[in-house]
Image (cartoon, rainbow, N blue to C red):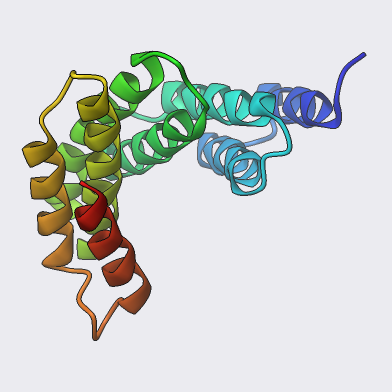
Amino acid sequence: MSSLSDEHVKAALAAVESPDVSIPEKIDLLVEIAMGFQRKPHFIQDLRHAVSLYDRALALCPADETVLTARIMARKGTALNAIPHEGPEFVEQARQLFESALRGLQREGSLEEIAETEMNLGLALQALATMGRARVADAIGAYLRALRTFTRESHATEFAILHNNLATA
């Protein structure tokens, strides 16, 4: 028996196969559905669906769309980081995606996108540090870089989250 999320994925993939839908529209559709799964996952499979839809969107991205590719990689990283895990595989993939996304975002992304990716990189590094696969100092460095943009005055919520993460680290 297939779940409602399985049906949503099938519908999205069918729409992507349509020759009447442009490449940018296909990418937008895939990312929007993936973000929906990620925002309110009911089951772990919802996060896995999000990852597969991000993969499909990345496969469609033109090579010259470095910022779009970076944004999708960062979103995929957050989905991977949210999947409950016993080993380092998903978190390590997330770390690699965040690092790649940062390279793309530093060219043309907004300061907030860069800071958010740094914050998420810090989370991945902190998780990996608990497994002995990264240094806590690297997680702290990522959080501190995010604080250059996420100040108390301009981004109070992110500022508070980062300070909580720093205290935990």
